[in-house]
Length: 164
Image (cartoon, rainbow, N blue to C red; front, side, top):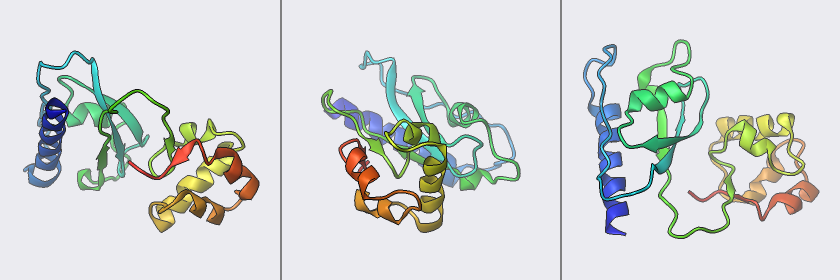
């Protein structure tokens, strides 16, 4: 567990440095995210990248990846976007393998569409709602999204979460 905390702290420090302390944002300075060799996992964790990128969503962080690599994986900066508008959320590695739920606060459209009864239009409505109103506090707030009623919520409630 100490190794996971060490990785998490290292990642947070690198991200804070890049987003808050980097000088010369217009320059293409590569910053490497280092991961201790003690792990034998090829994929350490997934990072949600959103804000000023073309394709927000979760992307895997592997040893040696930089913030530039994550931005590139997300389709690059959106036209006219400021590097400071990028948002990163780091998921902690799971303690044990178990049932995973889709976080409706961070899931990309394609992942929401995988839920029963949620097609392209409803997935976009969920994303639009959270962009306009902020993150959902609980899954019942999905009822505030146009096109989602109690029957759909009942069908997906065991598949979704608002927790990180």
